[in-house]
Amino acid sequence: MDTTQQPPAVESRTREILRAPFTADTWKRVAYVVLALPVGILCIPLALVGGPAGRIQRGLAGRLLGLETGEPARTGPLALAHAVISLPINVAAATVTCYFWLVVAINLGFPLRPDNDPTQSWGGPTMAGAWAVHGISGGVPFLFLTPWVVKGFTTVQARLVTGLLGTDRSGLLRTTGIALGIAALCSVLSVPIIHQF
Image 1 (cartoon, rainbow, N blue to C red):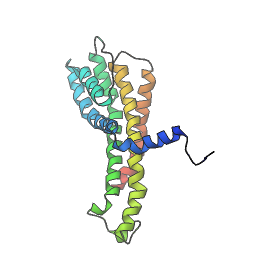
Image 2 (image 1 turned 90 degrees about the horizontal axis):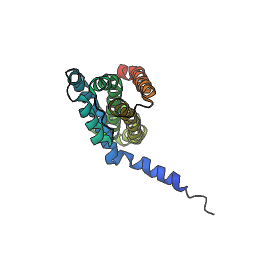
Image 3 (image 1 turned 180 degrees about the horizontal axis):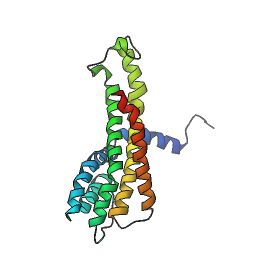
Image 4 (image 1 turned 90 degrees about the vertical axis):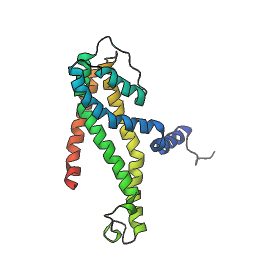
């Protein structure tokens, strides 16, 4: 018996992890994370005046996340509730997603950075050494981690859409608590990153 072969489940999972940054699903989720924040902000006044805020928010989730929610008879107050309650998780998701993709870009594109001095960088004094250290320690790990972080954020965001703007309200209170907890944790973790700038 050959013990060097991986079980099919491990091989399949490895393939899924390696493909994740390059799939349309990942980039649709990234688009949702980036668009959910401005759309949610615009839906607050729209919901206050009785506009189609719920339909807009459901439409965005439907197009980019493939989310199918039942359309309730009335969503006016719930559309406002969704826009307000999802605001902290939308801010956290957009910020973390943009920051993580920035980490990928600045580390994999290290030689293109105007501020790089390989003699003063980790892996220096040569450009090849500095690029290798930055690419391997920052670029590659974040390239494969970011799609899963985005998937986690969009899973919570989709549950809020389903619970507040759809017909399935089961577990809504728990999901709201999780969303607000994630947003609070991201706020706390952002403090040291902000101090770097």
